[in-house]
Length: 263
Image 1 (cartoon, one colour):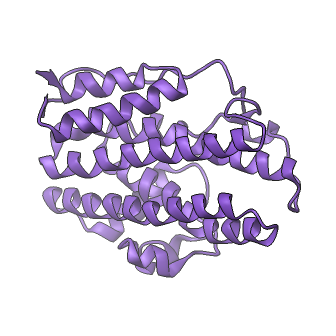
Image 2 (cartoon, one colour):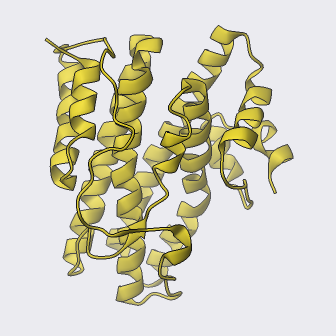
């Protein structure tokens, strides 16, 4: 039987986006079928294997996306979202392989589900891009999305604080307006995809919040104060309103966490 760590490492070292997507789904299936030992006994790579395209650019060099509902603008937005979901596969799998041994099996169950969701999200977005005459890799993409993982390789608590509870929570803030934007130009196909992703991301943020709280309890830490301290020390950015308070609350991320430290 292969260990969970070995299987997670194999996903991270798969460069082709579609092979990685399939590998993440296979990882989830193998875990659910009991074919993987709950052992995280191998080192995770500091940087996953990624394809030659898209070209990755620093945030300040990314082309500005045009406002409005042109097909070109919608393709650029969908491509950016596809890249987020592609990196999110590795973020979920790295969390499992790097830290899964510190938690009970339910933690792995939850994050295996997240990894499978991210793989499905990527597939939906890439399929939509192809329906519009493009594909993932056709445009440049943001180079900084993996930075949060690199800044939190030493501590599961920091990883949970930053990736699901800051980065994915930000998706809850901005996605409803993006759905409205697609609906406003009659692109109901893209809007439905984003609505599905939005619903799943509430569960992902909830998983982050639950397991952050669990680990704080294990270590005897105050949950809210610890999260605020980690965001201040580990997140390179600012928490900026507007916030989708209702969706965050549904995920267990209440205003007491972020209101006092938001810029």
